[in-house]
Amino acid sequence: MEETIRTVSGQIIGYIKTLSNGDKEVRNFTGQILGYYRKSRDVTTNFTGQILFRGDMSAALLVVRF
Image 1: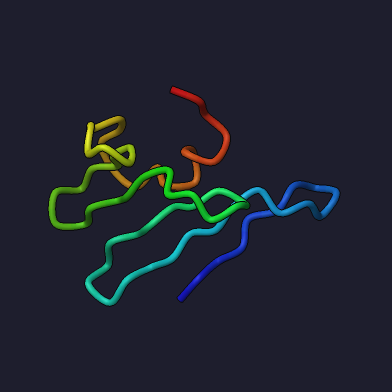
Image 2: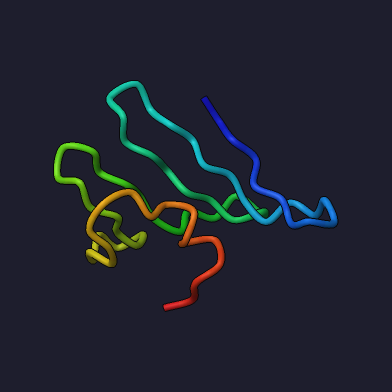
C-alpha cells in the first residue's frame, strides 16, 4: 500500500509505501529514497541505515532535513 503525502495546498511532497512485513519505505516527490521504518526493530532510519528515531516516524523524514 502506498500513501501520497501532500501539503495543505495539494502539492505532493512524498510517498510512504507499507510493505507486507510492516516495514515502510519513504520517498520524496521525485522518487528518491529518504529512509525506512523497520517494524521488527521499531526504528526509523535514513537511507544509509543510520537510526534517526525510535518508533514509526516515517512521515517526519519528509519534512525534517538531517
